Length: 569
Image 1 (tube, rainbow, N blue to C red):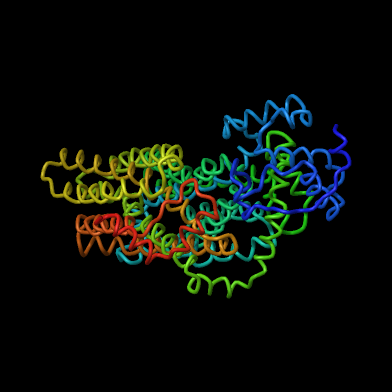
Image 2: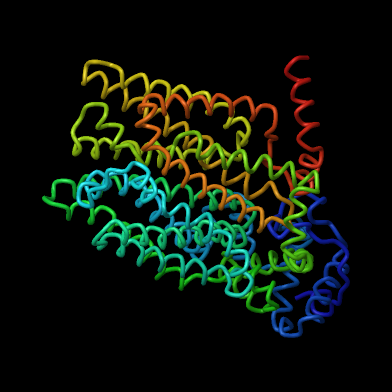
């Protein structure tokens, strides 16, 4: 080991602006690289002076600092600091940012996201079960049926997502995810054993509490645990598992539909108990967010967490070195009272523009019509002229198409950009709904079914490639650091409340406007969304937070004028 490495002391000069921009090679605006080694060692020395418990990790921390300072590359100049296996792993991580990750990183991303299977399964299962529990409980009121179906989304939006802002500070990400999984298990069992519609309604409200807690926490846990180079792919797992859950729920619906009596629908909605139970067990085995550890002053625990989450300790030390000062800034900003943070959403032009864009994409994730199509697939297919059992079987393909498209989108979203994917898919979504609505007027039952199913498949593929995953991504990245937690919570609450409104109103809309009329209504929203996207939604792919600040700081009015000039020039 070099004398420089052994005898260094420190002074911190440059820091990253964000905890989420942990490392971006060759980007000095985020993290200043290329400093003299003496300055880097002084930086590390100051950290250990401030936190003496880290002294026993001094050698590995200095290695990590050298690696970060040299843009995460092993060079002839710094090679003597590293062991051969460290050199190999650093190069592997650079060339294969996803495949090179540790087992713990895979486990935390997959386990935390796997709880989302419960949401997809429940939405799919209710779509199949509602035909039977409406008969058992003698439910004839369309508003009441809509309220029962949509109850989880109301609870998620009003209670689950908002209280994460407070619980997060005291209990950590893992605990909240674990609690949300337990609520998912209990809620799913509770609704499957409900003796009447009142009990079913309460059980579904309880289930929604867990949905809100999970959806507002999992993205933060994964983002704070992932290396920057592979963060986008890991974040996409949550939406991918929602789609997988819908497909799985459709499969279970078909498996149980032939059971005689009303046991069938109870097994359908009870089957969603399994995924959150699995997630609850495995979430106990993964590390806590290193960012959360630092936020509560547990710096050694944060370093140990990063050691587990990275393939080598030197990679963990590298990320700890870069995280350290940025998270100290985050902690200071987190002291801003919630009331003042809320005021910034309306008084600050940059945050207001982010709020407009985020609210729009969340709004369109619902009003594009996907949850009508997903939640009422069976009902729509029955209206197309087929029996209940065949309709439930047909919904399997809908779930599979959504899952496939979402998986493909995870490979494209950072390559082609958010804006272009929205512009390319909104017209397709609108056309598919008009197509589906028109198909219901076809006299031939065979042609009606074939045309309707094809339109549904086209719709879910376009949704999975566009607004489905893009809405979550933009909502997570649009806000500046000091209001991001609140911004994400607002977005998730907005999402679940809209989901509730649509699910509750659809049965009555279908009765008053006909199913085709309702589909035409949501089809028109997609065409309007195309226009809004062109004039108001900026591109955010591969931009640093500093660059995003510049994009959103111009405000919606200036962005609109610039887009208009481009269109008519």
